[in-house]
Length: 143
Length: 111
Image (cartoon, rainbow over all chains, first blue to last red; front, side):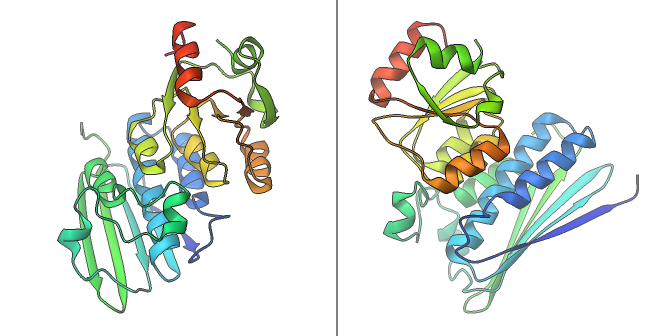
């Protein structure tokens, strides 16, 4: 199977369309008969990534690359960046606003959920500039 | 149990996503923190929550849940109703508290 690449724009503070990239990719992966358990893990990571951009980031991009042996998901945004990645990875740590917490966000579980469900996850961030979260999923993995 | 049967048995008002009422409920989950629901809700579950905005529909779709029940007399906003119709995720309303309704559902064999 040759590599299939898709990308979707994510707009800052756009709660109306939040999650649509993840739903579109979920449907695509189902059509491709990818392992349902793997699709669920990718859905969690994609949604959490989208919401991070909607709530915290500038505009961003959801990119997925589907190969026979691995799927790569990359969520990037144009800032403001993460000053302390280790802190951001701690369960329960959140910089969400009160408004977002009232909506059920800001539990400090987003990045930990992504890390738990991806086979590998890399975060690059330039404070004041941009963030890129890259997640790797092995198609025959058992995680 | 089908979502439609559950709505009838527990006197729930279906306000959106009626095209999804034929799907089967195989479990349940209670939660208002969306990341917690994303992490823990089982496939095929009925989701009890007090969140009323459109993002609950995306969570239900991505977690392959069967339907959403808004408890405590809460009602969905317009965007949530439209999204639920589009995605065929039933949204049902109950005046019961989450704890009480979950207990009733569990006693009836749901979950």
